[in-house]
Image 1: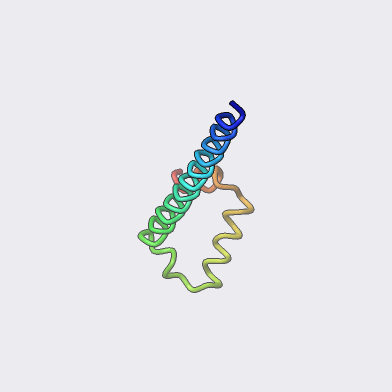
Image 2: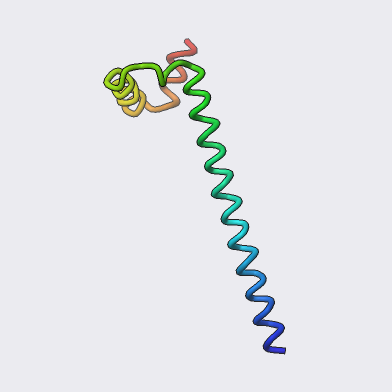
Amino acid sequence: MARTLEQERAALAEDERKLEERRQRLVEKEREAAIQVVDRAGLLKLEGKRLAGLMTCIRSLGIDEVEKRLTA
């Protein structure tokens, strides 16, 4: 019986590992999708200094505030 319990533990560990890999792939896909949205908006074409300044402003104001100001 101990062998069966060990096998079950090993199977659960393997399932957890596979699930974690799937989660990581999903995070990577979401990141790639976000980068594509930024690229389509033309932000990746900005010079580095200008983009860094824009990102600093967004960080200081916060996403919600920037969104509110842009839609106003």
